[in-house]
Amino acid sequence: MSVVPVITIDGPSGSGKGAVASRLADELGFALLDSGALYRVLGIAALRAGVDVGDEQGVANLAAAMDVKFASDEPGKVILNGEDVSLAIRTDQGSDLASRVAAMAAAREALLARQQRFRQLPGLVADGRDMGTVVFPDAELKIYLTASLEERAQRRYKQLIDKGISAILPDLLRDLKVRDERDSQRAISPLRPAEDAVVLDTTTMSLDAVVQEVLTMAHDRFGESTEGQQGEPQP
Ligand code: C5P
Image (cartoon, rainbow, N blue to C red; front, side):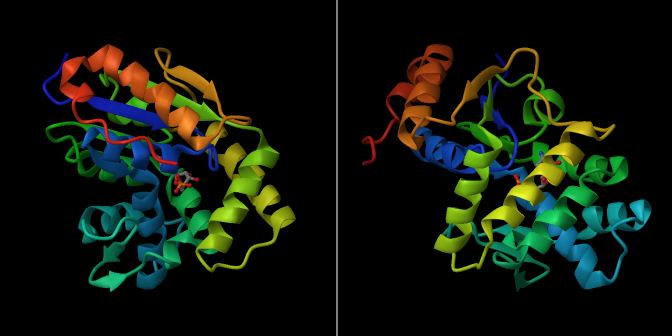
């Protein structure tokens, strides 16, 4: 086992990755990498800088140069070059730009080392599309979450409404489908489970049930180093 344990949580949008990863990180006292947020920030950075999302080298240069900070005091808060972009990156436009820049090899390459630097003691939970296949291929525990398209669209809808962002369900369903296709058919780092990943279909599972199942696997793999850190189960 490598020195710093990593749990990778991959899967399509709305599979529950984000919520599961953040609960796991809390329960285990591990750091959290929301890699999707990095692609989202890159899309917004391109928009702000007037760089066309089709301009691979321009986007890769931005990826290398942009100053991104994840606020430690406020989960989900992201600062790009001093600007709070937490809401901008979660809009439909933010989602679309993210999946466009994410299809470019040079942009992915430019973000690779940035993502790997999140691997710090006592451990990391990494959420994304290629965490188990490309970014942390030696991770000790790899999970691939999935759910039906309809269920994922419902979850995204609720997430946006809860954040005060307006949303239309049929539009979300269509956009998710387009992004799923783009993410899984792209030539570079396509969305797919790692060969050694545990695949969990969460369509009919509660968030708590998924978290508990993954925690049990984490305790089996990591043993005592994680057992003492588990918090109280949440309602
Ligand atoms: O996970 P989230 O929906 O925030 O990711 C936004 C987009 O970023 C995805 O649609 C995908 O195209 C891209 N992405 C990626 N690789 C990752 C994480 C996200 O290509 N590891």
